[in-house]
Length: 154
Length: 159
View (cartoon, chains in turn purple, blue):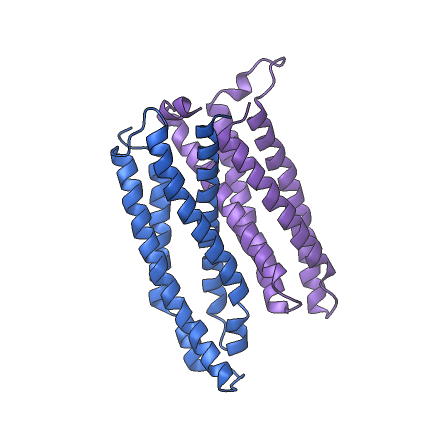
């Protein structure tokens, strides 16, 4: 793995940079959104801050990460593998957390959006608690994904 | 996974924590610009502590594990240009981060003073401190330096 890193072709660098930068923005947005929602203690300002951070930081980060992922996947030739050859485990973990994580992020944003709308009407923040829980689940999943993508376990 | 693979994984996770902390502070910088009450400013402190933990663990982990990797992994040496550049940039980001923190703590200190004095209403003086342009500039520079570290780590110029 380390030897591979030394000899990585230059043409892989830009897609890898976009992938990693997007993932870092995604994780940063999830951490910030979860912290704001978690420490809000019912205060509308922090609930909104948490939700808007997920929408304005995590979502663009996710899009950047996923574009970079597909680009580097193609550059590294993984899409040229024969059908009977499986992707390595680290790549499988990355793909599952990216795609399933995207779906969970979308659900958490929809729940949070409805939750913010309900706040305006003076209703409870229950849906934003769902958003908080999903954000924490995503954060944990992406920690595992980063570990797998960087350490490349067999 | 070999020991070096574990080191690399933890090094990269530390980098993620470092950048996540910096992003958290960007969000707080935007949020605090609208905050003119002592309570509103002080209420941000628990989130600040999350950012401090992320940047602290991230910065410490990247430099310690990064230097360890430089000695441990074959093909890399501590005196390689890109590794020296990364260490210099890391030191610069640490100092910029320290100064950014000091600039924004002025608002927290002022908010506590006002709260101790029994003032709960909006304070133009507190708002002005919370909108420190020096703090924004320092955090912007720290972010640029961290971005340069990431570019250096991926392109590894001269390796």
